Image 1 (tube, rainbow, N blue to C red):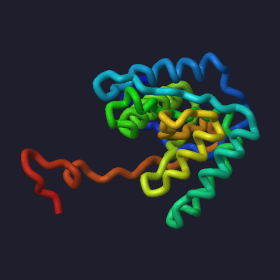
Image 2: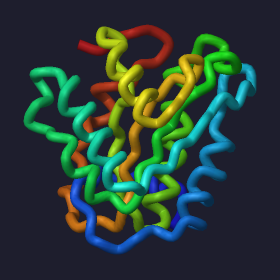
Image 3: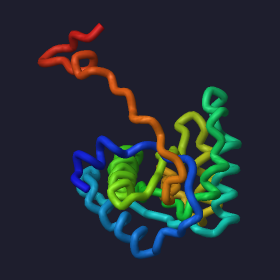
Image 4: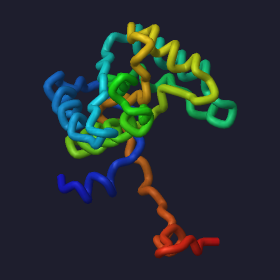
Length: 183
């Protein structure tokens, strides 16, 4: 699959069939994520691959417990059905105060590479700036030290749904040249 096609075709998947993703495929995805940009090339990423049902359940419970009111319609229970979950975290000691940016860029690489291989994923935050207990709980479940910051939870699996195409705003509504001139 060409990169343009992967970018245009990737959709958030929250239903997975029962097929298992081979460990080598998950490793390929993580290998590609290592090529993401990072602040001052700190390469601060730490990737936790979760397959154990109890750990997946605990991550879903944490996401549900700390879910903002306006997002309660989106339960995290579905992640238990994912073949694998990749938790993208960063080592703060080499993240140059860009924890979130570094983690999100690596997560985006994983999601695009997964889609290019026929896999589905959805981006889920592993932190809330207004609620540090989210990251602390995830760190505790995964045995991460305090200097490691969980950024993203990426459930991966073979899609059991085909979402509608994404409706995008026209470029004329979101692009300005030289100076801001929108709305």
